[in-house]
Amino acid sequence: MLIKICGLKRIEDIEYANILKPDYIGFVFAKSKRKVNIDLALELKNKLNENIKVVGVFRNDNLELIKEVIKNNIIDLIQLHGDEDDSYILKIKEFTDLKIIKAYRESIYSDYSLFDNEDPGKGIVFDWNKINTNKPFFLAGGINIENIDKALKVNPYCIDVSSGAETDGLKDFRKMEELIKRCRDYE
Image (cartoon, rainbow, N blue to C red):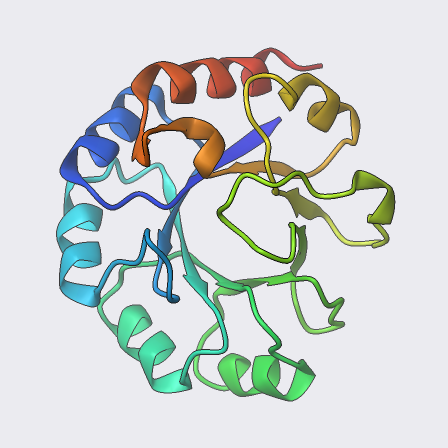
């Protein structure tokens, strides 16, 4: 099973990722306690193992921000985590071929769906009974060491963890290690 560790914002976080090698990491450009600016994201990306894909997380952001992040070659995928509609996604597709992950609202123009709690990043578990998509999907929303085995049984394309890989608001190497191991061992 693939895994994404989201909300990396420190050099230490990148060092952990380089050792543990999740499939994806996420840089949050949306308003959040995990928000990074372009300069910091570029510095972190330059230290990241090139085999780890970077997802840029945006929420109702101006398209110019997304263009700037892409122009700086920071991200490999775009995650839209707000009220973005099909017309917004089509505008993005006019200037990039990067794959798009759409949270909450199904879009025929996105490449992946993402299921998360309405208040992301707070560790609140998403109701997995509400999953309804024909697309490969990322599963987020309160996934942690205690419930990851149940989350894996939902059979997502990728497990997406942020607060569940933290202690006191900072990425925790041991938690990241255990979450990644459980995803790798899942059959």
